[in-house]
Amino acid sequence: MPAAIKSELNQFMKGLIRRNPGELEFHQAVEEVAASVLPYILENRKYRDAQILERMTEPDRIVIFRVTWEDDKGRVRANRAWRVQFNNSIGPYKGGFRFHPSVTLSVLKFLGFEQVFKNSLTGLPMGGAKGGSNFNPKGKSEREVMRYCQSLMIELHRHIGEDTDVPAGDIGVGAREISFLFGQYKRLENRFTGILTGKGLSFGGSLVRKEATGYGAVYFCQNMLERNGDSLEGKNVAVSGSGNVAIYTVEKALELGAKVLTISDSSGFIYDPDGIDAEKLEAIKDLKEVQRKRIHTYTNLFPKAEFHEGKRPWHVPCQIAFPCATQNELNEEEAKALLSNGLMAIAEGANMPTEPGGIRTFRDAGILYAPGKAANAGGVAVSGLEQSQNALRLSWSRDEVDAKLKHIMRDIHEKCVLNGKQEDGTVDYVQGANLSGFIKVAEAMLAYGVV
Ligand code: NDP
Image (cartoon, rainbow, N blue to C red):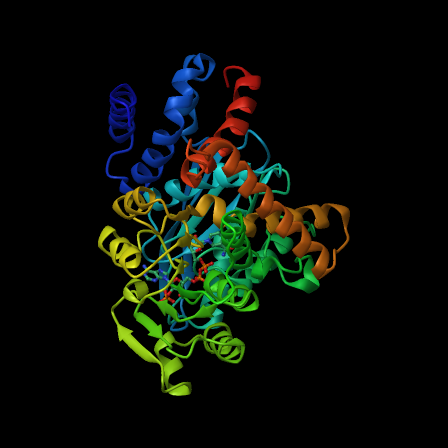
């Protein structure tokens, strides 16, 4: 990075850290974007004069509230929830809701900030937001989760709406939680309207929404490989996570002829030397989505597989990696191990799963590296399509939605190539995604004047 840009970046980050002390994940997400867009801002005075980056890194508003609920033993419990409405320059706020004990304001600000760029990349009219709570759904009964969702919606319903803010799921918030939240919203507002996405198919959900993030990540990876005259066919693949994104990443990778060797959860990872085939994937869906069991129980069903407790899958030799669990789950040492074992492409299903040292390692090595805001945008894209179907009061077929998803992922890939192409013909997908996402939002903000 040229010295002038580096000094500008350091100065910008100093101010941001001073204004947002202790918010490490937020600092990390902003620094990555700022490093990509600052050269462009310095070349284009209009963005600099309008303080666009300073304004983009300050959320429009944050709502923080208490959620009080009663557990099955009749004890009163209290949790904290947030909704970070980051930027609605190009459309109503849109972004998931996360239930996990690790949720903090910093985590939600990083996710909301990334969401602004991701939503811009989809080409759909969606602003960026993120919400969450430090509630831990693990070990809670179905009724406890229901009461929690209902209590949360009593406050949240004041801040959302189909033209204001449309939340969706994320870690710990799947079909079950979205259903409880939607049922409560409908009761409070006496209106049946698309204020959440990821809904059940019988009440306004879209076909392919559940699969969209994972499928989209694989489509994006296939686009990168195709540009290099290659494909997923016959490649060994490592996947982390065993939630919504991971499961449908595995499904699409299998369909495209890859061999998937790993899957994981926060307790460790499964290595299946024979590959996780379609039949085994159905067993995983049953374990995780129906029985809500831990991933190590896979070895009870398939004894040839190994469970590596407390470990992550990044030392397993593979050509393609899909981190699909959570932020900062792949460090520099693991990135080096992946490279020395023959990694050629990585597409992030999760948000910010690679630590900065790992990103540097992948970019320096010149392999195909797709950051989450591009690779996992398929989820929010189909959420946008769900909103369109709700507004039109109709439902598109599975093939129609899948074709639109494929088209959107191809379009995002082309935008990344356009703004990330290097002199030697390779593509810096980080720069491509950040710059493409930035320009659209920045232009809208400039058009609004000083707001
Ligand atoms: P799920 O809750 O369905 O699954 C999350 C998976 O990640 C689980 O296997 C979970 O294991 C694992 N995990 C969670 N926290 C940790 C941790 N600290 N360390 C190791 N493993 C962990 O969530 P999703 O699949 O929906 O989301 C996964 C990622 O994808 C997140 O980064 C999310 O923001 C991102 N994403 C999701 C989208 C969506 O449409 N759902 C859209 C775009 C991005 P365990 O059960 O042990 O906690």
